[in-house]
Length: 337
Ligand SMILES: C[S@@+](CC[C@H](N)C(=O)[O-])C[C@H]1O[C@@H](n2cnc3c(N)ncnc32)[C@H](O)[C@@H]1O
Ligand code: SF4
Ligand code: SF4
Image (cartoon, rainbow, N blue to C red; front, side, top):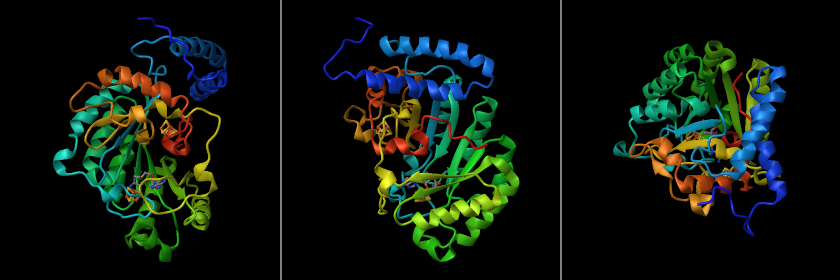
């Protein structure tokens, strides 16, 4: 079988090659610390990109050392019932959850390729001990970790244990108005979450970030959250509203697409039952609708080396849907400083 792609009528245009090159090289160069190393690393990356662009090798979906992000949706269960999100409506059963040891095995197998592991949900802190176990493994493997939480269960004990691991924490806050809180979260725990955010700031310092979702329902609130964070020196990011099965509405930014290739192909995403996909919006790509495999049943590298995994990564290079704006799908590493 030829190792060279045959040219097809549906093959991407030269413009896509340029976007593809830029989308791979730009985030790579941002991770080069020393200025003197930029030119040689650019040359090496360009050679690597050219090889990977034209040849089918079993490991070509790995974009060089530390080029991938492992994202674990540890659960679909949640303490809250946010109208922006539908994940909480379909919680997994106990017997559907992957044992944490299997995820840690997967992390160990991949760690040389990872620049970050992200734990999200549902609400990850419903499984705080598992989150801390993953955090300890990530620290030992020298992989930075980020946990995305709604802040409800983020008590001082958890924060002190988490701080020892040196990882980042992202807390989701869409309003700082007490009277609007319950409508935004389905629960009346404004005081509790806001107090937890203050404690997190004092314990985690710059490792804490706040993230808000921009929808037509939250437009004015997001500005106030940004001001709240600025006054306290907390980094703040905004994610446009997408269809997560919720009932909020998009703003003009939500439907924006653009010329840059989606960077989600750097992602390796794991669902609570161990199913592996390349992006959590994979159902929009017909070939990627079914998971690529399950890490409870197969070795993660074997899953990523499947023919279909390669084909899905190739299709993602020209995928141009609004979901590419989500923070997990951006080409740059979203750092918690
Ligand atoms: C699905 S949540 C899971 C983690 C945790 N429960 C939380 O709320 O932070 C992950 C991130 O997605 C954001 N999010 C929820 N619904 C969204 C939507 N419809 N569009 C875009 N982002 C959304 C949340 O605000 C959070 O920052
Ligand atoms: S956004 Fe987070 S806190 Fe809100 S329902 Fe979804 S998973 Fe739960
Ligand atoms: S645009 Fe959306 S569906 Fe397409 S690869 Fe990116 S995240 Fe996945």
